[in-house]
Length: 60
Length: 499
Image 1 (cartoon, chains in turn red, cyan):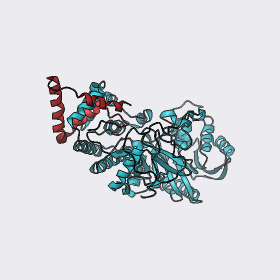
Image 2 (image 1 turned 45 degrees about the vertical axis):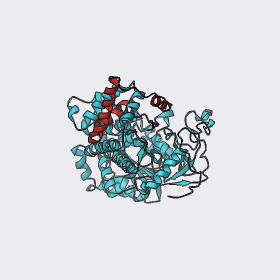
Image 3 (image 1 turned 180 degrees about the vertical axis):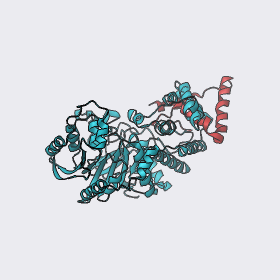
Image 4 (image 1 turned 135 degrees about the vertical axis):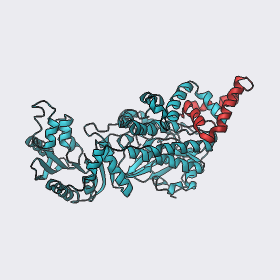
């Protein structure tokens, strides 16, 4: 998966909102979003360091 | 389409390619402190993949390698043949194409000319709504072909008369897996919130858009809403929840991007959100007050002698030669714009009152008119240059000089209503550079009396027929004048002396 490289800042809250507000199409994605959060909260899953590094160029 | 496609070989698909190669040093010359180098459009710099520039009388767009790749992908979708998108073709050997972008120019598009550039803070409600729907429809059409619009700004839409045209070819790009609808926030700030302000609150959005080139922020919009508004369609999500989430995630841009990516943002989700937005926008409505409808309905039934003679006067001037661009300033319901259009290629019809202009736009749109561009603007406070360096969005006179100006039933509003000295009004009209049809209502005119009524006795001593004629005669050569039947209104046709 590629990182967001748009010239326009999509806005962090705006991205989360799209996941929550997408209706039926969003159910699976929302579930995954919160499932991942739960796993991280329970320390079953950690942040992927590679993804962390790959996301840096978008700050340019 | 077609043109010279062999300009540059196949574009390498790499986002950070040779970034510094063509970065122009001309940007630092002293004369460029107030505007970009000659020939480069002052307002299309935000997207580094494409930029508009001018050569001769034509308008072009320089594309980066990625931009060219996106354009080729767009060509294959067949969307370009759609009349809703500005006609564009790849061309070769255009002077001035290098140094326009931060990267090398890999391709150049030639665009169809838009007769007169206008901005959302000059559009009526239905114009902004139609531009929003055009934006969303093109986004949905692009998504079907695995493409997307990278932004959602109304500055990417222009009007040819009553027809909205999407002008930013560079906004189409290939969809990247896992991306959200990048332009959603911008759509809210520049389209949805302004439309909601007008539709729900009956607050004109024009000063808000003119005051901020990026539009209204979610938190600002929330601050303008009442408790009751929380329960209106689309408000909870797009205003209240949006503002709350923006606040909550403001300090975590990187973490949020990762989280969104891991959750697997897919095309179907973008489509679902865009469709919901389309439904919301299409249900928004605003109508001018009832009095405006009544007056508009009567526009073609004027029976008094004054109206007929005024029609004839304007028609004789308008059809006396082939005018290219006519400005009808203070156009009201567009009666004289339509007469001017009998002899002009393009007419820009402007009035401070949004109501009649809104009704005029609806008629022009429904009849497919591409000659008359209706705009709303207070002429005592016309659109200035805005944005970066004050030239990103141009001031009204910098967008094309009129060769004929109609100023009917206007002077008294600016001079008395706006407290502008008569000599300055005439000087401004002369500065526009075109021939002039102007109407001067004398102090005995009922409308002038009404404007003077709330003012202190003795104000506006310069508002006198003789003084106006002296000012007019100094700047213009008066070709013809006629006092209308009622005796309180005088019409003039004048040519600027400097011309």
